[in-house]
Length: 176
Image 1 (tube, one colour):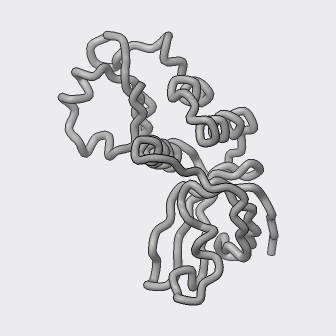
Image 2: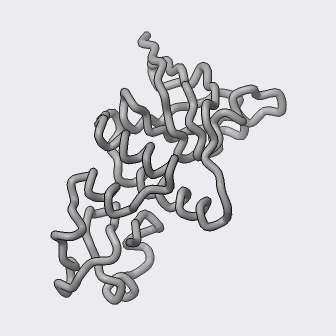
């Protein structure tokens, strides 16, 4: 049984088995982590408020047959108005789709933290993934791209994006 304590950005939380939660983190030391919080949705659950999306939390994880979240303490909440919330929600969905579990990257962690703390630039974040928007062209027509798709790591212009079926991108894209 392995135990880890790390700083984590909560990207998403889903209900599992009525009372349990599946939580998606992006961590400084472990990369993307999908953990299970047992009884997180019960009335007396102490972890639930600390595991809300857009929280920066210090978490303790135990790996046995699966990753279990034992402790969580919120250190910072990222919040703002409706526009900022929508921007953070889009970025959290994008990160959840684009990142692979267990691959830590200190440079990417720094860019993600910069984005969430100061409302950073989407182009810089995409560039930290290794995809430079200024050097890219639309995958279909060759025009200047305005959108980056997480599903297949491709760039599209606005016109081609509008013509693409919705199920092809599933809200996991960045528009700049």
